[in-house]
Length: 290
Image (cartoon, rainbow, N blue to C red):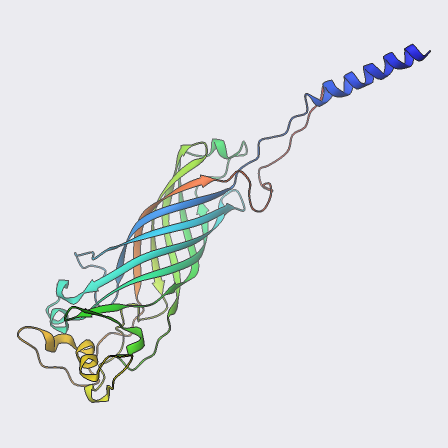
């Protein structure tokens, strides 16, 4: 009798072990990726119009995290460092050349974007995604705002000087929008080419928006003397030969919001685990035993 019990127990253990060997689960469907990007930025505003032939571009570098929430919609957060610049001396408009204003800025930008992909995420998982997948994106974010300029070989931070009598903030809201194409490189890496048009809800990315101040209203500010402030406000008098300063109240800008356009690429690396756990859209766990 004891021998029979022992044989039955051995058979039960063997059967359980055999069954466990054939339990399978579907691969984790990777739907989150980390990206690094590089791009060129072109400013659009009073000192450079969108149809100007000279781009006067600056570099940008980006880090991002993207998570797919549905078959076609993802959310991406991105942190970028970018440079924008413009100089009236390069303008095709004669009056702008005489105005003689210029600026450059290296800013930090943080945005959150909704992305819509043309082709659905495959039911078989990320490894079978489309080779080329166009997408559109729209978002919301903030950028730092600290324009600078040079005069007589010295560099000046313009925001603290309030050259138009307006003390604008060091942060500005931006609305990024654009499109791109996501390319399959290998199982775990994508390459994204995209353009992004950023509308800034400020006219002071370039420190130019309203009208000229009366030169007599300037006083020493932030370590800069009143005479230099007058030159920074209206540097046409520093031209060779010099041009007479314009009267106070003359338009310096057109009160419109500034913008910048970015063309670039990103390398995206699929993460082994989503920060939000397994996918609820395509990660069905399959179990079978025999």
